[in-house]
Length: 270
Image (cartoon, rainbow, N blue to C red; front, side, top):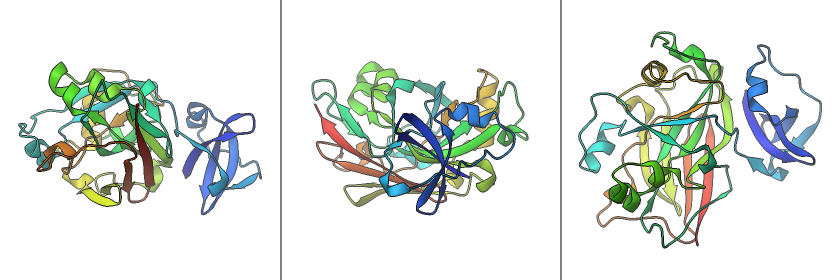
């Protein structure tokens, strides 16, 4: 299934995407839908996808992100390739949806960078799970842009502000359920900024696979339905360019992952 959240006449709604149309499934509580073992009932109400105001596909309980999970990305920033997953947290308040605006204050940061990533949505409670069983705990996948303020990252010596500012975690446009992506290590990720390709990588190049990450994280934290794991970004970020390139007023970032779709956001400097 390909699921979308959108703004209905009386609040958030969840729909099943079928081509250019969306079939209404129910209210906007994605966790409630996750709890259903059978495919949810369709209401019979069909709306054109192009006429809907999309929302983030879910508001995560928590967001656990992985740094430097692609060797070439670690090297392009002159960092060591990690020997185990480098884990940090992103604020759920940073989440926005497809078509929403990434914004920041010029007095706070002037080095805002893009990072296209595969996002994993946990579908059932996971604690100390094995790598062999880890993918059984995945509800689905979506696209993320782990927007990063590089100057704050350097100055703070840790990443809470740099990657957790409001609007710095675009997610969407849809959730593709796990049954439609049997191998999350075989997906192409492409990021374009103002129509120019910046990143072109494959999840096959992850240092630590999705199953490894779930097993690793579940040894430290209970993963709950609706939690999101950001799995790292391929090489091609702005800071690594010569000279460095950063997002600015009116920049448009699009992240495409095959089998999922395209997540597009414009930028506004306050």
